[in-house]
Image (cartoon, rainbow, N blue to C red):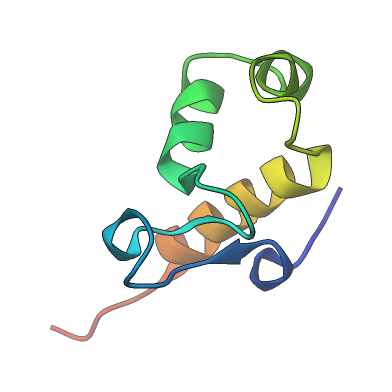
Amino acid sequence: MHVKWQDYIESTPDVLRGKPRIKGARIPVSLVLGYLAEGYSAENIIAEFPDLTEQQIAACLDYARELAAFEVDV
């Protein structure tokens, strides 16, 4: 499932000190990615956080993909 991360993730300085998070929630992207890195499925994560959707979890992966593809001129 491909989603556009910008539709599901935001970062504002007044919430979680500006860390990227799920829009409308206080769930940081890093938390979702950590669960995925530990081998949790989307269904397992949703069981822990019932307010999350598969689209939001996919958006976290898309966000990480875009960060990993970012190139810096040295």
